[in-house]
Length: 467
Image (cartoon, rainbow, N blue to C red; front, side, top):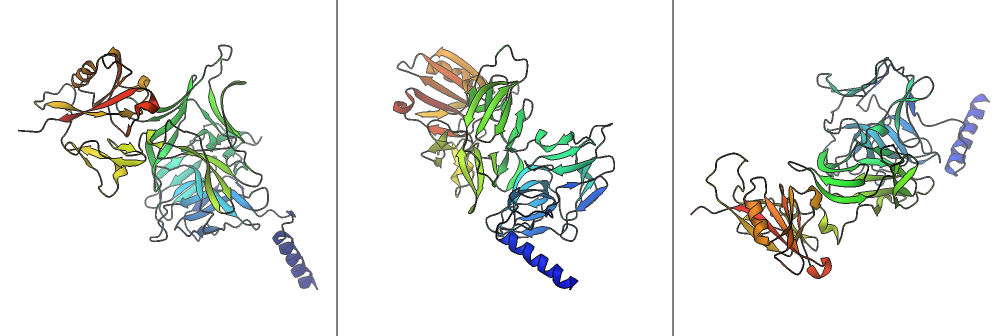
């Protein structure tokens, strides 16, 4: 009789869950842990694991189930998302927080549409292999160790003297180490990688840094940052970053707080204390789903949301005039973007990096410039490209010269060993224009003067052919 009653209760519970009822007397997730716990990156140790249709692997150590009882949920664990279409087994894993699709039993599922979306990672530049371990020590520190020699790959560096009672993946995706009063001692929201979640802020001194590519997690040269007067996106260059997006604002003198970026449901806001300095309206996230924004390797800041068909971009926050050709890496270094088609600027002086993939950029046929201060007999000249523009904000150019002629602009670049290109912009009079010197060249863009309402020529420094 007891066996029959137990079986009946189980059948009723499964039937209620399948029918969408919200009976949750027994939790199916495991979102928290106490110190002196460890996990190994193996299927045997992390029995809650899944291999997806594109070859990605998720091994969950902690899981915070969606409040609806199923759907996109947050998991801490080891994730391999190399998108190899199952051709090879995953060998490089991130320790991170990812959004995974879970059913009403708290099991990761949706092999095709629910590919893990890593929204924070600890070891972005140092992936680990099979058998790596995560330790939540008695002292309250998270330590990731490599499987080969046990070397420390990453740790939270929990402040000395802070007492840690446990850790949890919260319902907003924040991984938190907390004390006995449930106050955060360390949290992943303070260390963003390339992604922001609803409720997360980007403070001054922190950056969103894009991945190198869709399949390469290492940091690229693209980053987003906030200051007291602007929200800006840059591509890192030598000797200074080049800015391709700039949202300016004015902070009131009454506010002594530093400006910061805040991501909430339906808006992205720059704030200083209680003052709102700038607001970008966003699509509202629907109940039961998850939304995140990611700075991507192409320079776009895209908003993603889960729907029954899987993850999809629903909004592009960084939009440049006049089109996507204005992004700094769209055609690679020295690549020319024309109606989203890439080419090299001059066949006599440049060649594609990869003839089959023109968006990889171009390289000079001959070395262009010697190091500053070094003696060189190499002669240089400029290749002029009319109706061409360059994305870099004049304020972040190597040097800007105003009210000059085109000849003076060219001479300024040839005389400066750091200059590799000059953009000359003018209106009706080519003898009275603006000159912007560049220390490094990323993607160029063809221009229509009737659209931009000014004329622009880019001059590229090249080596003179040997006789």
